[in-house]
Image 1: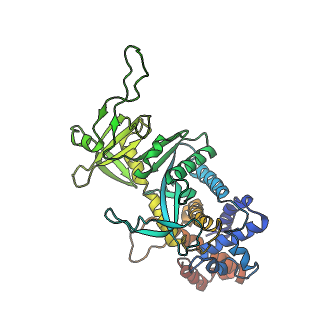
Image 2: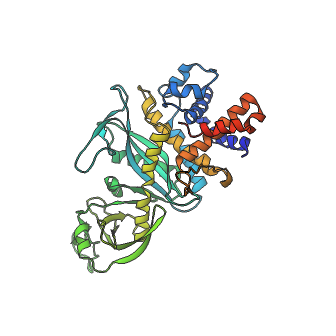
Image 3: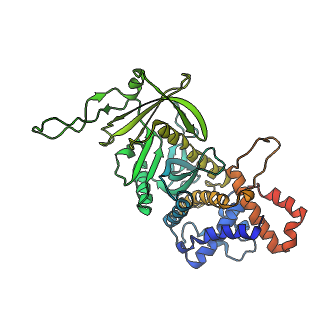
Length: 431
């Protein structure tokens, strides 16, 4: 692998964002990112510091102050990142976004912005479990990797949900409008779970909403234009129809379609109809009912504000939303997004946001490499593995960062020594 070219690619990516910092802040930013990637212990500032600045050239206070006190904006990083990702992966066509919220666990009563929130991972339909931490609303860009399969969800915007302030829906609306304003000439699709279905009633330019619809939703036919104009205002809705769950019971003619869900094809029976969900939006929606041909699974009910979409496309787009769940898991598990110990001011929100931002950056760096350089290990216990995971992507980046450090310390000959190659293979997956 050409080490110089690979490392310069990672560095050049970071350099795009230095306009968001002062000169001293930019130096700390670069070191902090490299230390975060290489860190083999908990991602606290003191845990990252030995890997970020091993020679101790900067005072440790500079790293501690970076999150709560330094002059920089997470919004600026998101805007630049979104521009690079869209230019790289969506030169043309409709841009697909996924939206959801997650909980970053924290300890300590003085963590700014933290509160008691429902923990979706530990909760169930019959039991709610609460946890202390940061409630984050995240917007991701859905991209199809070259190896196929499930798409990747790369964060491009984030908001912190605080008690007694803007709601999750309002924060989601802010983020979508912000991204649309950054790229006003592009078309967007926003996919979210049923909690965010009311976004269909918001005003977005060039944006389609895809989500679940309530099984007992009040639906109406479209209003029929009167043959003669009479007194009074025109009707805004037509005759009320059955709710989705009851409607599914009376459907006799189902359409069999092949649906691509998270990279895998499967057969579904579908029924679709253009209706009004008047309580949510006065614009028509396309209701899509999806049924398992074998009758083992419960019916699913989806809708989209783009009535020209095919039912198979709607179902596939919603299934691909699962990529954002993998994003949350990988950010917490492999980047330690919940671990930075910063408490005051914007520190907690910035640290959480930077972990999400770094997740997108690692994938962007990895996908920009040549296919021969997209290295990943095939272990004896998983010989059929054919696609890299995020663990492989970050291990590949660690391998090259360690190679560069070893070369700087011991010279070019060291990186070709078999002993150092063994060391690199041991260090790369360590986290």
